[in-house]
Amino acid sequence: MGNPRRHTMRRATLLMGAAALTPAALLTAQAPSAQAFGTVNALGQHAEHERITRAALACAPGRPSDGTCFEPRSLDQIAGHKGTFGAVGAPDTDEIATPEAHCDNADFLTAAGYPRSREEATRQLQACVAKLQSRFREGVDAAGGTLKADGTVAPRESDLTRDCTFSLGVPGRNKCEAIEGLGRALHGVQDFYSHSNWADKAATGRPLGKDNPPGLGLPAPSPLLALSTGRPPAAADVPRELTTGCFSLLPLGCSQRVQHSGLNKDTGLIDPATGATGNPATDRGRTADNFDRAVRAAITDTRRQWTDFRDALTARYGKDRAATIGCVLTHDDPARACAPKG
Image 1 (tube, rainbow, N blue to C red):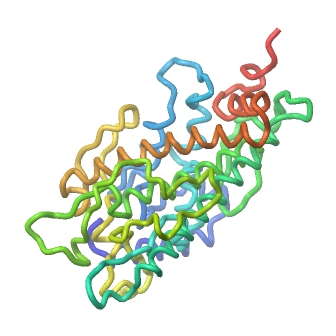
Image 2 (cartoon, helix red, strand yellow; image 1 turned 180 degrees about the vertical axis):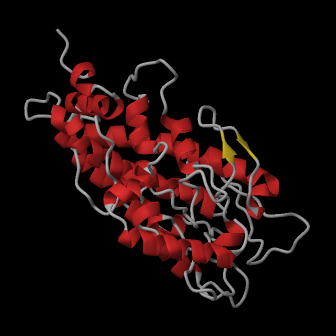
Image 3 (cartoon, rainbow, N blue to C red; image 1 turned 120 degrees about the horizontal axis):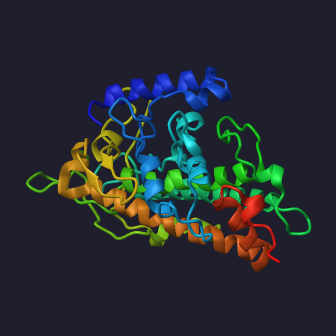
Protein backbone atom coordinates (compact mmCIF):
# COMPACT_ATOMS: atom_id res chain seq x y z
CA MET A 1 0.00 0.00 0.00
CA GLY A 2 2.95 2.28 -0.54
CA ASN A 3 4.18 4.94 1.86
CA PRO A 4 3.74 3.85 5.53
CA ARG A 5 3.48 7.48 6.68
CA ARG A 6 0.57 8.01 4.29
CA HIS A 7 -1.09 4.87 5.71
CA THR A 8 -0.78 6.26 9.22
CA MET A 9 -2.30 9.58 8.19
CA ARG A 10 -5.18 7.84 6.38
CA ARG A 11 -5.93 5.64 9.35
CA ALA A 12 -5.76 8.54 11.82
CA THR A 13 -8.15 10.54 9.66
CA LEU A 14 -10.61 7.66 9.51
CA LEU A 15 -10.36 7.10 13.26
CA MET A 16 -11.21 10.72 14.03
CA GLY A 17 -13.96 10.76 11.44
CA ALA A 18 -15.56 7.56 12.71
CA ALA A 19 -15.75 9.02 16.21
CA ALA A 20 -17.76 11.96 14.90
CA LEU A 21 -20.03 10.22 12.40
CA THR A 22 -23.55 9.11 13.21
CA PRO A 23 -24.37 5.46 12.47
CA ALA A 24 -26.40 6.52 9.42
CA ALA A 25 -23.49 8.53 8.07
CA LEU A 26 -21.12 5.64 8.62
CA LEU A 27 -23.21 3.50 6.32
CA THR A 28 -22.76 5.90 3.43
CA ALA A 29 -19.28 7.25 4.16
CA GLN A 30 -16.71 6.00 1.68
CA ALA A 31 -13.81 6.26 4.13
CA PRO A 32 -10.74 4.09 3.49
CA SER A 33 -9.23 1.36 5.61
CA ALA A 34 -5.50 1.84 5.85
CA GLN A 35 -4.70 -1.52 7.31
CA ALA A 36 -6.82 -4.27 5.82
CA PHE A 37 -8.15 -5.78 2.61
CA GLY A 38 -10.09 -2.84 1.15
CA THR A 39 -13.67 -1.98 2.05
CA VAL A 40 -14.39 0.79 -0.48
CA ASN A 41 -13.88 1.59 -4.16
CA ALA A 42 -11.60 4.59 -3.63
CA LEU A 43 -8.06 5.61 -2.69
CA GLY A 44 -6.49 2.54 -4.27
CA GLN A 45 -8.96 0.07 -2.79
CA HIS A 46 -11.42 -2.09 -4.72
CA ALA A 47 -13.81 -3.32 -2.01
CA GLU A 48 -11.63 -6.40 -1.54
CA HIS A 49 -13.44 -7.62 1.60
CA GLU A 50 -16.78 -7.40 -0.19
CA ARG A 51 -15.49 -9.20 -3.26
CA ILE A 52 -13.84 -11.99 -1.26
CA THR A 53 -17.05 -12.52 0.69
CA ARG A 54 -19.19 -12.56 -2.45
CA ALA A 55 -16.86 -15.03 -4.16
CA ALA A 56 -17.06 -17.29 -1.11
CA LEU A 57 -20.74 -17.13 -0.14
CA ALA A 58 -22.94 -16.00 -3.04
CA CYS A 59 -25.54 -18.28 -4.57
CA ALA A 60 -25.21 -18.81 -8.30
CA PRO A 61 -27.19 -16.18 -10.25
CA GLY A 62 -30.90 -16.98 -10.24
CA ARG A 63 -30.48 -19.92 -7.88
CA PRO A 64 -32.40 -19.91 -4.58
CA SER A 65 -30.38 -20.68 -1.48
CA ASP A 66 -30.24 -24.21 -0.14
CA GLY A 67 -28.96 -22.84 3.17
CA THR A 68 -25.29 -22.99 2.17
CA CYS A 69 -25.17 -19.79 0.09
CA PHE A 70 -26.63 -16.29 0.50
CA GLU A 71 -29.31 -14.80 -1.72
CA PRO A 72 -28.61 -11.29 -3.10
CA ARG A 73 -30.21 -9.05 -0.48
CA SER A 74 -28.89 -11.12 2.42
CA LEU A 75 -25.46 -11.23 0.78
CA ASP A 76 -25.53 -7.43 0.55
CA GLN A 77 -25.77 -7.31 4.34
CA ILE A 78 -22.79 -9.51 5.10
CA ALA A 79 -20.58 -8.44 2.17
CA GLY A 80 -21.68 -4.82 1.75
CA HIS A 81 -22.77 -3.05 -1.39
CA LYS A 82 -22.49 0.44 -2.86
CA GLY A 83 -22.71 2.97 -0.04
CA THR A 84 -22.31 0.45 2.79
CA PHE A 85 -19.49 -1.43 4.49
CA GLY A 86 -21.53 -4.54 5.26
CA ALA A 87 -20.84 -6.72 8.27
CA VAL A 88 -17.48 -7.86 6.93
CA GLY A 89 -16.37 -4.24 6.58
CA ALA A 90 -17.69 -3.05 9.95
CA PRO A 91 -14.33 -3.31 11.79
CA ASP A 92 -13.02 -0.65 9.40
CA THR A 93 -15.58 1.80 10.78
CA ASP A 94 -15.30 1.39 14.54
CA GLU A 95 -12.39 -0.99 15.31
CA ILE A 96 -9.75 0.73 13.23
CA ALA A 97 -7.38 1.08 16.17
CA THR A 98 -8.04 -2.42 17.53
CA PRO A 99 -5.18 -4.63 16.27
CA GLU A 100 -6.94 -7.82 17.37
CA ALA A 101 -9.78 -7.13 14.91
CA HIS A 102 -7.28 -7.26 12.03
CA CYS A 103 -4.64 -9.70 13.37
CA ASP A 104 -2.01 -6.94 13.44
CA ASN A 105 1.09 -6.61 15.65
CA ALA A 106 1.85 -10.34 16.01
CA ASP A 107 5.24 -9.71 14.43
CA PHE A 108 8.41 -11.71 14.96
CA LEU A 109 11.67 -12.55 13.21
CA THR A 110 14.22 -15.13 14.26
CA ALA A 111 16.98 -12.54 13.71
CA ALA A 112 19.08 -11.75 16.78
CA GLY A 113 18.01 -8.59 18.56
CA TYR A 114 14.49 -8.45 17.14
CA PRO A 115 12.51 -6.19 19.53
CA ARG A 116 9.73 -8.73 20.19
CA SER A 117 9.99 -12.33 21.34
CA ARG A 118 8.21 -15.29 19.79
CA GLU A 119 6.19 -15.54 22.98
CA GLU A 120 5.00 -11.92 22.73
CA ALA A 121 4.03 -12.36 19.10
CA THR A 122 2.16 -15.57 19.87
CA ARG A 123 0.21 -13.93 22.69
CA GLN A 124 -0.87 -11.17 20.31
CA LEU A 125 -1.98 -13.75 17.74
CA GLN A 126 -3.91 -15.63 20.42
CA ALA A 127 -5.61 -12.35 21.39
CA CYS A 128 -6.63 -11.86 17.76
CA VAL A 129 -8.12 -15.35 17.54
CA ALA A 130 -9.91 -14.90 20.87
CA LYS A 131 -11.41 -11.64 19.57
CA LEU A 132 -12.67 -13.32 16.41
CA GLN A 133 -14.03 -16.25 18.42
CA SER A 134 -16.03 -13.84 20.57
CA ARG A 135 -17.53 -12.26 17.43
CA PHE A 136 -18.35 -15.69 16.01
CA ARG A 137 -20.06 -16.61 19.30
CA GLU A 138 -22.04 -13.34 19.32
CA GLY A 139 -23.39 -14.24 15.90
CA VAL A 140 -24.48 -17.70 17.03
CA ASP A 141 -26.11 -16.21 20.14
CA ALA A 142 -28.09 -13.64 18.15
CA ALA A 143 -29.20 -16.12 15.51
CA GLY A 144 -31.58 -17.85 17.90
CA GLY A 145 -33.68 -14.69 18.07
CA THR A 146 -34.68 -15.00 14.42
CA LEU A 147 -37.22 -17.65 15.47
CA LYS A 148 -40.24 -17.56 17.74
CA ALA A 149 -40.52 -19.91 20.71
CA ASP A 150 -42.42 -22.41 18.55
CA GLY A 151 -39.57 -22.57 16.04
CA THR A 152 -41.23 -20.54 13.29
CA VAL A 153 -39.73 -17.43 11.72
CA ALA A 154 -39.97 -14.16 13.64
CA PRO A 155 -40.76 -11.82 10.70
CA ARG A 156 -39.78 -8.55 12.38
CA GLU A 157 -36.40 -10.00 13.37
CA SER A 158 -35.58 -11.20 9.86
CA ASP A 159 -36.95 -8.43 7.64
CA LEU A 160 -34.50 -6.75 5.24
CA THR A 161 -36.69 -3.94 3.96
CA ARG A 162 -33.99 -1.66 5.38
CA ASP A 163 -30.27 -2.34 5.36
CA CYS A 164 -28.76 -3.51 8.62
CA THR A 165 -26.65 -1.10 10.68
CA PHE A 166 -23.38 -2.63 11.85
CA SER A 167 -21.37 0.26 13.31
CA LEU A 168 -20.81 1.66 16.79
CA GLY A 169 -22.84 -0.98 18.62
CA VAL A 170 -26.21 0.15 17.25
CA PRO A 171 -28.63 -2.71 18.09
CA GLY A 172 -30.75 -4.15 15.32
CA ARG A 173 -32.87 -7.06 14.15
CA ASN A 174 -31.60 -10.46 15.20
CA LYS A 175 -30.81 -11.46 11.61
CA CYS A 176 -28.63 -8.36 11.40
CA GLU A 177 -27.00 -9.10 14.75
CA ALA A 178 -26.21 -12.67 13.70
CA ILE A 179 -24.77 -11.52 10.38
CA GLU A 180 -22.73 -8.86 12.17
CA GLY A 181 -21.08 -11.37 14.48
CA LEU A 182 -20.19 -13.64 11.60
CA GLY A 183 -19.09 -10.76 9.37
CA ARG A 184 -16.79 -9.19 11.95
CA ALA A 185 -15.20 -12.58 12.52
CA LEU A 186 -14.72 -13.02 8.77
CA HIS A 187 -13.01 -9.63 8.53
CA GLY A 188 -10.21 -10.74 10.84
CA VAL A 189 -9.95 -14.15 9.21
CA GLN A 190 -9.54 -12.57 5.78
CA ASP A 191 -7.05 -10.03 7.10
CA PHE A 192 -4.93 -12.80 8.62
CA TYR A 193 -3.99 -14.02 5.15
CA SER A 194 -3.27 -10.52 3.88
CA HIS A 195 -1.41 -9.33 6.96
CA SER A 196 0.65 -12.44 7.70
CA ASN A 197 3.18 -14.63 5.92
CA TRP A 198 1.06 -17.78 6.44
CA ALA A 199 0.31 -18.36 2.75
CA ASP A 200 2.84 -16.14 0.98
CA LYS A 201 6.45 -16.30 -0.16
CA ALA A 202 9.41 -13.99 0.35
CA ALA A 203 11.04 -12.15 -2.51
CA THR A 204 13.97 -14.02 -4.03
CA GLY A 205 17.26 -12.28 -4.63
CA ARG A 206 16.90 -10.18 -1.48
CA PRO A 207 18.11 -11.01 2.02
CA LEU A 208 15.48 -12.08 4.52
CA GLY A 209 14.75 -9.55 7.23
CA LYS A 210 12.15 -7.12 8.50
CA ASP A 211 11.63 -5.71 5.00
CA ASN A 212 11.46 -9.17 3.43
CA PRO A 213 10.28 -11.65 6.07
CA PRO A 214 10.23 -15.34 5.21
CA GLY A 215 7.06 -16.69 3.63
CA LEU A 216 5.59 -19.91 4.98
CA GLY A 217 3.60 -20.89 1.88
CA LEU A 218 1.10 -22.84 3.99
CA PRO A 219 -2.38 -23.90 2.82
CA ALA A 220 -5.75 -22.59 3.95
CA PRO A 221 -7.75 -22.91 6.04
CA SER A 222 -5.27 -22.32 8.84
CA PRO A 223 -5.84 -24.52 11.90
CA LEU A 224 -4.96 -21.47 13.99
CA LEU A 225 -8.31 -19.91 13.02
CA ALA A 226 -10.65 -22.64 14.27
CA LEU A 227 -13.14 -20.09 15.61
CA SER A 228 -15.92 -22.52 16.45
CA THR A 229 -13.83 -24.29 19.10
CA GLY A 230 -13.81 -21.24 21.37
CA ARG A 231 -10.17 -21.93 22.23
CA PRO A 232 -7.23 -19.85 20.96
CA PRO A 233 -4.43 -21.89 19.38
CA ALA A 234 -1.82 -23.43 21.65
CA ALA A 235 1.57 -21.72 21.54
CA ALA A 236 3.16 -24.97 20.38
CA ASP A 237 0.94 -24.95 17.27
CA VAL A 238 2.11 -21.53 16.07
CA PRO A 239 4.92 -21.82 13.49
CA ARG A 240 8.09 -20.21 14.81
CA GLU A 241 8.53 -18.03 11.71
CA LEU A 242 4.90 -16.88 11.51
CA THR A 243 4.59 -13.10 11.55
CA THR A 244 1.97 -10.48 10.91
CA GLY A 245 2.80 -6.82 10.35
CA CYS A 246 3.19 -4.13 12.97
CA PHE A 247 0.87 -1.16 12.52
CA SER A 248 1.05 2.03 14.59
CA LEU A 249 -0.50 5.48 14.36
CA LEU A 250 2.85 6.86 15.53
CA PRO A 251 5.33 7.53 12.70
CA LEU A 252 8.12 5.53 14.40
CA GLY A 253 5.87 3.16 16.32
CA CYS A 254 7.01 0.12 14.32
CA SER A 255 10.66 1.04 13.96
CA GLN A 256 12.91 -2.02 13.55
CA ARG A 257 9.89 -4.32 13.28
CA VAL A 258 8.18 -6.15 10.41
CA GLN A 259 5.78 -3.47 9.22
CA HIS A 260 2.29 -3.79 7.83
CA SER A 261 3.28 -1.65 4.86
CA GLY A 262 5.89 -4.18 3.78
CA LEU A 263 3.97 -7.40 4.44
CA ASN A 264 0.35 -6.69 3.50
CA LYS A 265 -1.32 -7.95 0.35
CA ASP A 266 -4.40 -5.77 0.82
CA THR A 267 -5.20 -4.31 -2.57
CA GLY A 268 -5.79 -5.51 -6.11
CA LEU A 269 -8.62 -6.57 -8.37
CA ILE A 270 -10.87 -9.50 -7.43
CA ASP A 271 -13.68 -10.96 -9.51
CA PRO A 272 -16.59 -11.23 -7.05
CA ALA A 273 -18.04 -14.20 -8.93
CA THR A 274 -14.95 -16.37 -9.38
CA GLY A 275 -12.35 -14.93 -7.01
CA ALA A 276 -9.88 -14.50 -9.88
CA THR A 277 -7.33 -11.78 -9.13
CA GLY A 278 -5.28 -9.21 -11.01
CA ASN A 279 -3.26 -6.00 -10.68
CA PRO A 280 -1.89 -6.46 -7.14
CA ALA A 281 -1.00 -3.04 -5.77
CA THR A 282 1.44 -3.72 -2.91
CA ASP A 283 5.06 -4.83 -3.08
CA ARG A 284 4.44 -8.05 -1.16
CA GLY A 285 1.28 -8.69 -3.15
CA ARG A 286 3.19 -8.48 -6.42
CA THR A 287 5.82 -10.95 -5.19
CA ALA A 288 5.33 -14.62 -6.15
CA ASP A 289 1.57 -14.28 -6.81
CA ASN A 290 1.13 -13.40 -3.14
CA PHE A 291 -2.00 -11.31 -3.64
CA ASP A 292 -3.66 -14.24 -5.37
CA ARG A 293 -2.46 -16.58 -2.62
CA ALA A 294 -3.94 -14.33 0.08
CA VAL A 295 -7.27 -13.94 -1.71
CA ARG A 296 -7.66 -17.65 -2.44
CA ALA A 297 -6.81 -18.46 1.17
CA ALA A 298 -9.31 -15.89 2.44
CA ILE A 299 -12.07 -17.29 0.22
CA THR A 300 -11.32 -20.84 1.37
CA ASP A 301 -11.39 -19.89 5.04
CA THR A 302 -14.52 -17.75 4.66
CA ARG A 303 -16.31 -20.85 3.39
CA ARG A 304 -14.89 -22.91 6.26
CA GLN A 305 -16.11 -20.40 8.83
CA TRP A 306 -19.63 -20.35 7.36
CA THR A 307 -19.73 -24.17 7.45
CA ASP A 308 -18.52 -24.12 11.06
CA PHE A 309 -21.08 -21.43 11.90
CA ARG A 310 -23.90 -23.67 10.65
CA ASP A 311 -22.48 -26.56 12.67
CA ALA A 312 -22.37 -24.30 15.73
CA LEU A 313 -26.04 -23.45 15.20
CA THR A 314 -26.86 -27.16 15.21
CA ALA A 315 -24.86 -27.75 18.38
CA ARG A 316 -26.58 -24.81 20.09
CA TYR A 317 -30.18 -25.07 18.89
CA GLY A 318 -30.63 -28.61 17.61
CA LYS A 319 -30.90 -29.84 14.03
CA ASP A 320 -34.41 -28.63 13.16
CA ARG A 321 -34.18 -25.13 14.64
CA ALA A 322 -30.68 -24.70 13.24
CA ALA A 323 -31.89 -25.58 9.74
CA THR A 324 -34.62 -22.94 9.99
CA ILE A 325 -32.17 -20.37 11.36
CA GLY A 326 -29.79 -21.10 8.49
CA CYS A 327 -32.68 -20.61 6.09
CA VAL A 328 -33.52 -17.25 7.69
CA LEU A 329 -29.94 -15.99 7.48
CA THR A 330 -29.48 -16.91 3.82
CA HIS A 331 -32.90 -16.16 2.31
CA ASP A 332 -34.16 -12.72 1.31
CA ASP A 333 -37.80 -13.49 2.16
CA PRO A 334 -37.50 -15.94 5.05
CA ALA A 335 -41.07 -15.45 6.27
CA ARG A 336 -42.14 -17.16 3.04
CA ALA A 337 -39.17 -19.37 2.16
CA CYS A 338 -38.60 -20.75 5.65
CA ALA A 339 -42.21 -21.30 6.70
CA PRO A 340 -43.24 -24.88 7.60
CA LYS A 341 -44.28 -26.87 4.55
CA GLY A 342 -47.68 -28.51 4.31
